[in-house]
Image 1 (cartoon, rainbow, N blue to C red):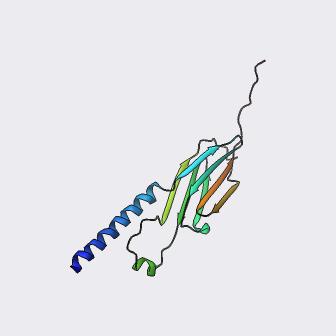
Image 2: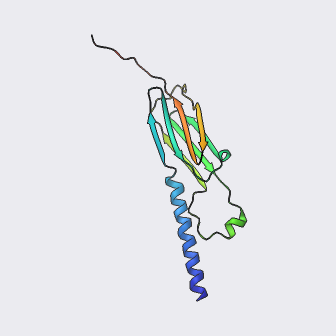
Length: 130
């Protein structure tokens, strides 16, 4: 009976590892909305420390990288590990930043939620018809 229990425990652990790998690939979920003069992104990154998160804006590509270290003691007693340990997400932004005039002006991380604000420089001019 001990062999069946051990095999079941290993199977559950492996399923957890595969789930974590899947979540690391697809996460984090991102909401993005455009106001007149700024682009705001809301990114869910629960379980990461503020110092574990790195942001880079290159043209219209925003890179979000985060990683956390699980101690050997916690890892040794781990039965299931589905939460992501690494995030490496590249997001194509719907704004033109070729001139690199737009920069991240605000990034706030609170309660596992990262809020990023990027100012938008409007191109062109509205023309009223008389």
